[in-house]
Amino acid sequence: MFGIFYRWSSPAYFYHQSARWIPWLWLLTAVLIISGLVGGLVLAPMDAQQKDVYRIIYVHVPSAWLSMLIYSFMAGAAAVGLIWRIKLAEVMARVSAPLGASFTALALVTGSLWGVRTWGTWWVWDGRLTSELALLFLYLGFIALQSAIEDRRRAARAGAVLALVGVVNIPIIHYSVVWWNTLHQPATVTKLGAPSIAVSMLIPLLLMSLGFMSYFAAAVLMRARCEILERERNRHWVLDLVKVHDNK
Amino acid sequence: MTISEFFAMGGYGAYIWPAYGLTLAALIINALVPIYWHRRLLREFRQSHQRQQQLQRKNHDV
Image 1 (spheres, one colour):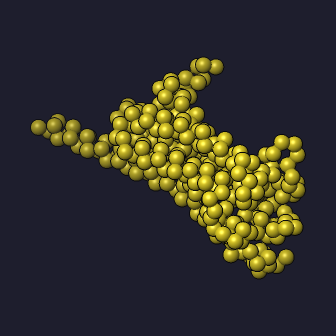
Image 2 (tube, rainbow over the protein chains, first blue to last red):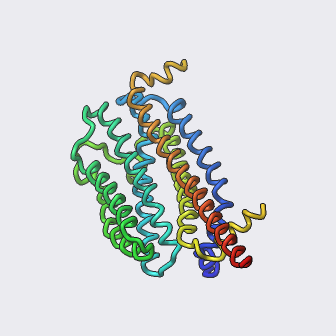
Image 3 (cartoon, rainbow over the protein chains, first blue to last red):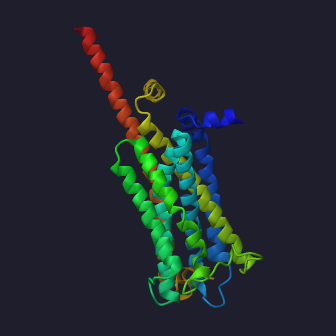
């Protein structure tokens, strides 16, 4: 067991193995997102109160979930990198940040488009919206810190501290709708007991969410492979990569 | 449901389609970034490899 873990954390091994997974992850992503879109935009019924505008949920909620999930992944990877000095973990934390920031921005923008139609305003300083905005700034701060420190290993350590402090914000986002019940609607899917959403509306939402997760897995692996090459550019196995290309 | 009804989205198309369009754009851009990044890296490695070989050949001739 430990042997597998050790092998996988080797950058060269990871670089070669991950290349075999990526096409399958893209295929899975395409299947999930396309079926989620058909289910959400065509098959799901109209909402009794909100009419068709509720359909923004199928991009808004998966983006918002991913923004928190990616942050947790990033902070976890950063912690592993900080404690055990595992290079691959540092790489994962670093390359997750731009993807997490993208999903956070998407959650905010799609929420804004939804809000302007149903609440009559693009933005309010509501608990959920404000803590999600704080998440965006945490990601941007992490990215800025990574690019400000030349030495990648030192940058990883500094970033890990920031990422771990920011973890506090994750439960705040989750419970914000309970603590400050101002404008954003409370949880319907993840609340304890049965979700209060019709099954024909829920299934596309779950398909889209799984599709976004699979997308993240594919995109983060692709970025991690590049980041590994950046760090290992003077190693033998990277030079061999170019020689193999020459022989073709 | 006709095609135009589908795109009208019950009159909410102006809110729904930008949300879906921006999401799609972000997903596509984030997928393209590592593709170009990888290409650039391999090109850089190949160039430095060729430079080294030329250097070695030159030293050999002298």
